[in-house]
Structures are given as C-alpha cells and as structure tokens.
Image (cartoon, rainbow, N blue to C red):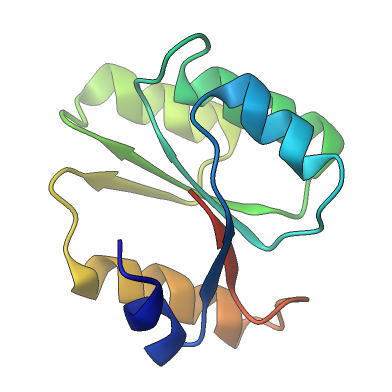
Amino acid sequence: MSSFYLQQVGGRVVGQAATGEEALAWLDHHPIDLVLTDFQMPGMRGDELVARIRTRWPNVRIAMISVCADAEIETKAQATGVHWLLSKPITLTQLERVVRSVVGHGSRLSGELLR
C-alpha cells in the first residue's frame, strides 16, 4: 500500500503490525481513526482482533480484507462491528473510499491508518 497514495486522499499510515497481538499493543499507545486488518493473520484472526478493538476503542473505524469474503466471513465481520469488508485484491479506489469516508466524518487524526 502506497503511503504517498494515502496522503493524496487525506490519510497516512502511522503504524504496522504483523499480528493481532502486536496491533493491540501498538493501539495501547497510539490514538487512531482507522484500522485495516486482514481476516487471516498469524495468531488471532481478524474478527477476533476486531472484537478486542471494539471493547477498548469503540470509536475506531475498521476495514477488513479477505481473500474470500464468503457468507461466514461477512457474518463474523458484521457481528464484530467491521465497517467495510473488502475482497482481495483491493483496489486503490476501494481504499480511497474508505479513507475519504473516515476523513469526511470528523476523524480525530485526519484519516490515520494502521495496517
């Protein structure tokens, strides 16, 4: 994902995490508007990460990506409060819509993104 492109649409990458546990530890020390997570990750799955984010940071917007956004994944995403479910490969247009939506709704940090 191009940081330059995100800046063009009003956002910026402020951190990265390889696992859900790493993401939670990072979020403990950094306010953020948007988390972009994959459904399949080492350790905890994306829906588990989202559920844990929801309990601690209920106002964070979440976009989840998945290789195959089937009915089961859609149900889990909805149940945990995912705002956007995107199927891989995601396009820059899809990413732009997500970032602009966050920036356009009074985000605290101008569309900052954790991926």
